Every structure is written in C-alpha cells, then in structure tokens.
Length: 288
Image 1 (tube, rainbow, N blue to C red):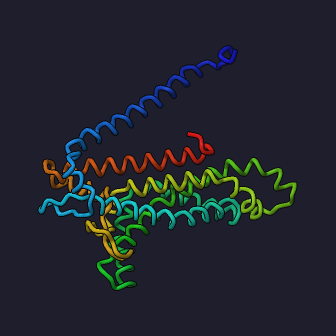
Image 2 (cartoon, rainbow, N blue to C red):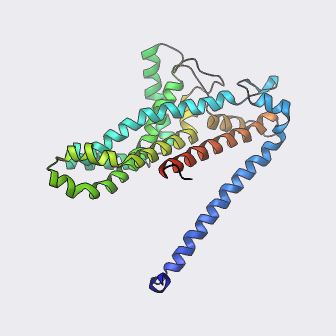
Image 3 (tube, rainbow, N blue to C red):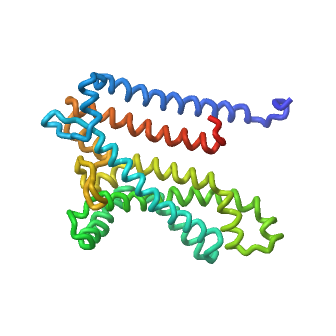
C-alpha cells in the first residue's frame, strides 16, 4: 500500500542511497582487509612481541609502536577536553547568551575556521604558540605534547561547535512553546531545556572531535617534537602514529620498520571504529 503512494523518483533515490551504503561498507571492508594482509608477516611471535613494545630503534632491531600509539591517545584525550567546553560555550553564546548580531558573527567565524587548511594552523602555532610555551616554561624546545594538544584543540573546535550547534537547532523548536508558556528567558530556556535535550549531540561532538584528533597528521608532525618516547610531562616531546607513518614512509619502503606502519594503521582503524560502535551502542540505549 505504501508503494502506491510513492512519489516519482523516490524509488530511484532510495536505491541510490542503498547502493551508496553498500559501496561504503565495501570500501571499509577492503581497507580492513588491506591492512590485515600486510600485517600478516608481523604475526611471528618474536616479531609481534617486539612490535608491541615502546622500543623504537630501527637501526638496532627495535620496531615497537606502543610509544606512538600512546602518543596518539594522549594527544586526542587531552585535546578533546580542551576543545569541548569552549565548543559548548560558543554554542550557548550563539543560541541565547549573546546578542543576535554578535552570535551571527561568531557563527560565521566558526564556519570559516572549518575551511582553513590544517597546515596553516600548524604554521601559526610554530611561530606563535611554540615560542610562547618555550618562554613561559623554560623547558625544552617548546615542541611538545602540550603544544600539539593545544593545536589539535583549535583544529577540532569548529567541528565540535557545528555538531553541537546543529543539535541545538533541532532541540529548540521542540521546547519553544513550553518555554514561552513558562515565561523563561532565552538564557533559562537554553540552559535548562536545550542543553539537557542535546546530550546526543554532545556525545557525537566528542566522538567526532576524538576521531579528528586521532587521525590528524600535520599538527602532531609539526608541533609534538616527534620523539619516539613515552612523555613524562606535557612539556616533553612525543610522536603520534599518524606523524610516525608520515616520517617512516618518506624514508623507507622495504624493511620491518615499513611493515610496522601497517600495524600502526590497523591500530588507528580499530580505535576509530571501536569509538564509533560504542557511541552507536550508547545512543541506542544499549542496543547494537
């Protein structure tokens, strides 16, 4: 019965959407198969044991990637908490705490930030942020975990802000009449009704921010110092997996160090997939 009332072209659009979903799934499966295939030579027990260490000394037979894996997680887990409160504050300013004119200007600025190339953020940070950190703490060169985390926080801020902004836009019409009937001000409506209704948007913003931070290459490459070590403090250098892949693939293509890059890629793939699946599970109320 439903198909009798289907609009012209709706069937074609639905088929196109299904085909796109199928192709996307096939591409993801192909990427996973590609990474697994090139990781097979690393499954030798001795090789695998060496890979799962923090000892990266390729000229002495050390190919451990755990220090770089820890570096990626440390950067993402420090950048997201820095960016998230700012993103929420910016959205609250746009949706009621600021004047309409100022809110429009702030929103346009955030939208403009999404189009700025990552390398531009990196160059600005190299010539502004790094000298400030060096002068403020008098420790090291300034190229550090802290510098990269601050750079990544600025990078992921527009993405997180726009995700929360879109959720606020969905929530506001649902409570507009109720808020008016209760005599709530714009700020009260925002803080007591819109924000609590936007929990899923907050979760999506956190996941997108985390995925962007884990997957970025230029900011860690330019700002973290790229020392293959476990940092002792935020002022120490570290190396992220993405930067590690870029550095090694530019100089080698045949050794075990090169093969270890596929293990690094597989780690990034599974980390991002795991976070996304967990979010879907949480948003579904515990249903897969």
